[in-house]
Length: 174
Length: 137
Image 1 (cartoon, each protein chain N blue to C red):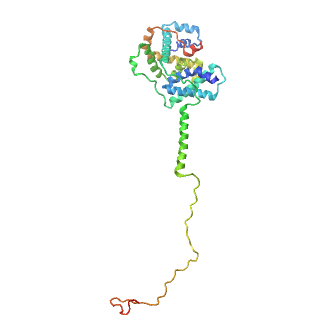
Image 2: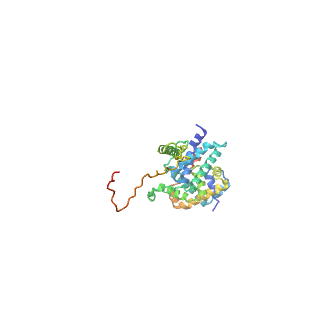
Image 3: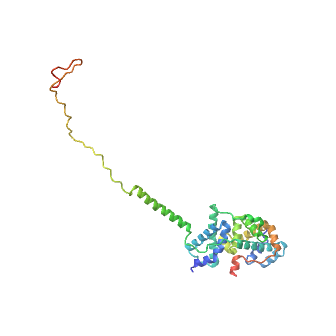
């Protein structure tokens, strides 16, 4: 297995999940995921640590996603017609999807890179070309906005209890 | 925006934080509420992700197939168009020279022949009969 193939196997899920939320449809996200790794294979793996490579990878993904959105290809995430009758256990997920859509672009990027791709603050800063302080502040801002938007749904969820859930990458690393 | 609880975010996200600042943030009821909500949010994201059945591409392809299909269709059209054009209008190449119209000109054309001088002149008068002895001569 080559470096690029191993890199692909390790990170395709994270890249896809992130792109899926940014560009909307799964088909576009699949195409863009392919494009991200094609660029990686063309450019060659950078001489950096795994953390540096991951940040570089998501920087490519983010730039492609921004171009895609800028060209007007973005489709909103489909919301099922039966949304009003979804089980209470899934209510938060549906509301969350809508609330994430409504976030400012950078806040959404930072939040998704953290929660869906599991990047560290330093990696997010590199991927988004901002400082770590900005990441810290934007992430807090995004969570406050989501919290405000999801208030009642979070209250319902709170009654069921809370569990310490690591972000995807943290779980994989541990 | 209240930045007092950024330390809670960083702690939840596995970043190294100042212990005193974290204790201070968690000493407030609002801070503790925030901590619980951050976990609930994460749980919601995880559930939303697991509910999404769409999967990433299984294999890394050399190139997106649609690009290849488009290129192949374009090449087929060009080649097909060339051969159709070849059959309809013949080979493409320099046109055969058209022969100039044939005109024969003689440098000294003979003058048109003059009518022979009459040897006998017959005068016809209207209103008179033809001579009796004549007719067949």
